[in-house]
Length: 288
Image 1 (cartoon, one colour):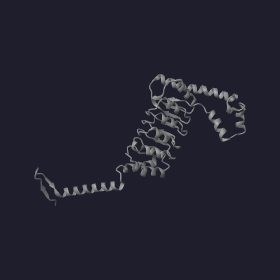
Image 2 (cartoon, rainbow, N blue to C red):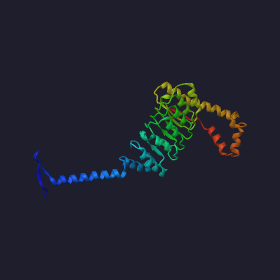
Image 3 (cartoon, one colour):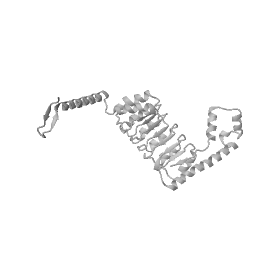
Image 4 (cartoon, helix red, strand yellow):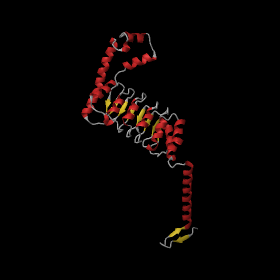
């Protein structure tokens, strides 16, 4: 039978044995927490471990808000990505403390195809490191500081398909460089777009870009850029007619090149690529 004692202060009975039991459980929990922290070395690691486990299913690793240190990134994240090449996506938004380490690592990584690093304080020089990567084809680095220098570095990448660089201190110079990229299918640049003839001429020449996000509600500006799709078709029709009539360098003596190409099955890879690229219909440009 439990022993009863009466408090001197409030004259309330309490169970001495129960209090000792509760204290013992609490002490065991504290000891367990301490040993767990000592074993793991980092308070954030359990969360990171669970995200890595999830990444094996989703093929994309989300390390947002894990408060990574450089040591943790090198000792845990890098080995995980190296040992699991099937993980092709990485979201490191907000991890500005290790953003340089991430950029340096990704400049040599050959597996990551999708990268999202918003609000990571990415600088122009860090963007140049990302531009060295040959596998990333979908890049979202909005809300950083890449500037025109970083935009020009990305514009030289030939493997990029989708790029979003809103709010990055990019001027018309950087935007024009990006529009000259002939591999991009989708581009989000924001308010650096201006309604001038030179810029619109670049968009007409670029036949691969299908989506241009300019982050504006100006109806006149949107209508102006929507007319580009029509002009693309007109340009293509004119060039195609020239091709058939023999005025284009790839046409040779004129329309017989097509007859010879298909009749003799000249499947030289280089010729096939050049002809198929030229005959490809113009892309419809959607403005948002």
